[in-house]
Amino acid sequence: MQPEMTPTTALEDGENVQHSFYPCGSAYWRDHAWLAAGAMGCGMAILMLLGNPHVWTGAIGGLAAIAVRGFYLASDELKARWDLTETRLLGPQGRAVRLGEIAKIRKLGSAVQVVTLSGDKHLLKFQQDRDDTIARIERAKAVAG
Image (cartoon, rainbow, N blue to C red; front, side, top):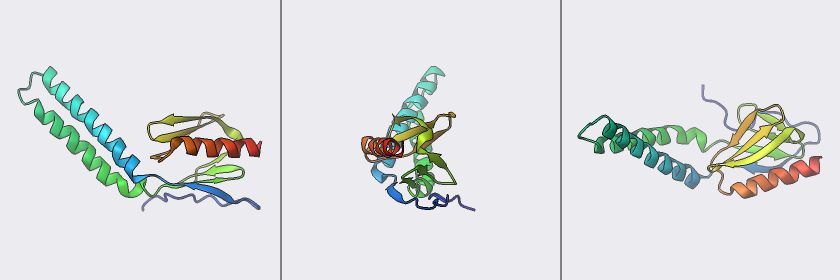
């Protein structure tokens, strides 16, 4: 069974979705390009340290690993949606965070990390404009009080 990548939490009485956050395909592939570059460099460095004369194969292995991962996960990751209401941030697989329970909001690559007062962490991955995502959540949090 495939996990639900849109919010499944029911809205409360009088609660309305103010904005939906969707992942950006170009941010997804840009992040994977950076991961591939890092994996290629690490693969080559490991082979060099081991004295392997075919160091270039580390680059191919790193690229292949990240490419397979990227294509395999794209169908799910690019369907993930988060909804912002007047009182909560609702995410995939039943995630729900009351705005008043948000302790920190920070950038993490192309993602926005939301940390609750209890220490729970949630990622709104592959955001096209992280600053806009953060600003919208902070404005809603200020209004919610």
